[in-house]
Image (spheres, one colour):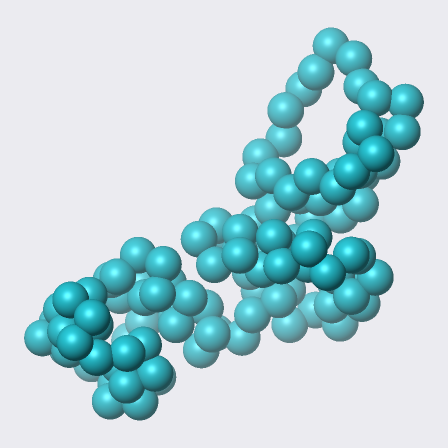
Length: 115
């Protein structure tokens, strides 16, 4: 985790922090900008023919800046109901299916797989 990015994240309003964290559960990176009096969190850049007068680039965040490797694996499982490629542990699809069918919680799945 990147301490400079953590400090930048903490300096933003709470709802923007949550949007960044939620976005990085599903995407590898996101950008934050301020324009038209509000913050925007996007997963890509867009060239425009004109920009707001108050437009300011705040920063770019990656999942590695915010989440540990363990938390990234948990986020991936929670978001996509599957195992990420980088997960090298036991891929118990019976347990995954139980989680997907809501027979066990995410915490139970994580504990049983020793993630």
